[in-house]
Image 1 (tube, rainbow, N blue to C red):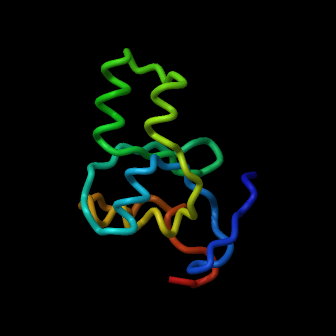
Image 2 (cartoon, rainbow, N blue to C red; image 1 turned 180 degrees about the vertical axis):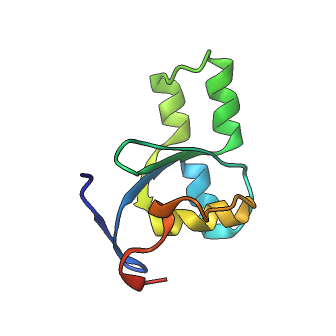
Length: 104
């Protein structure tokens, strides 16, 4: 089981791993596209469409250079919901994006 992280806004939540551009979307409300998967532990891994294009141009393989450009950050999954909303992606079926403990 994945260990929870503490978020000042949402309390103890599961982590999400997102590119820096998704973090920017969460902060400024600007849609940058969102490509995501949920790992076996229920954690969201997400990146913007620009990072997706770079990844596809590289044959779908992450390289050190691509990882530097994506600058992956760990945020709480409840915060990640904001990126889904900004990009008009429904989260209803993604149980792990619901805040744990009622902190909205």
